[in-house]
Image 1 (cartoon, one colour):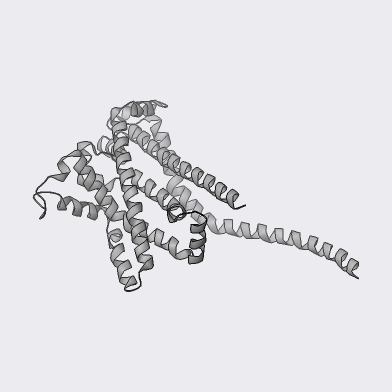
Image 2: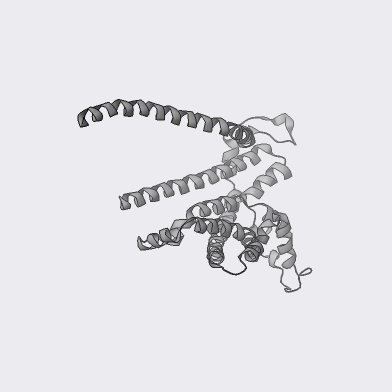
Length: 296
């Protein structure tokens, strides 16, 4: 009887396997159909503008001289990459990005730990901490500009926005003040989603809290800071060597009406952001392989 039962169960298993495969294919098909509207909207909002910017960057397209419009290939990129202004703006962007992201992660992690451990008045504390993130970036930039302008400030007589490094300090402080609450919120959500038992096991295995939580937040902060525009535009307008790549693209596109060069700068900024994202994802994947290999 045992032999008959074993042999008769095999066709049932074989019959159930195609059914599961069909069910899996149906579920994936439904998932794609549900995602299709969002994908189409994203393509219309992002893919088309990027493609159009690439097309413009390959043309001489100055609205001041419409008769001179024509295809120039990579000449706009050559002009941009050979310009000292581009590299100076890249350095300014890197300074703001590196310093602000480091401070946002450190302060955000500290705030997340405090909020995670808070027992009394947790909801009120959460609301108070998140208030800066709810303020529009332009409004925050103006507030910090007024606070560090001698004629408008009530606590300083120094023209902080009149010198290069003090201007960087005000810009970075504004970015950190504005973005740190959201970073703390992301880290707090990560802390709340992980049971304490798993955190203890991770500590025993040698994985620190920094290694467990910072990857995604670090990527978000870096990509957000690389594209910094509002704060610099409001507070300095790019003066004192604080012009960023986003501001350079804006100046070429809107100020000088040079759509070809401005689009080239924009495409290079997009390529820089995509390269940073790809580098982060590659590093994360390698780290995941190491962790999986160590636990196996």
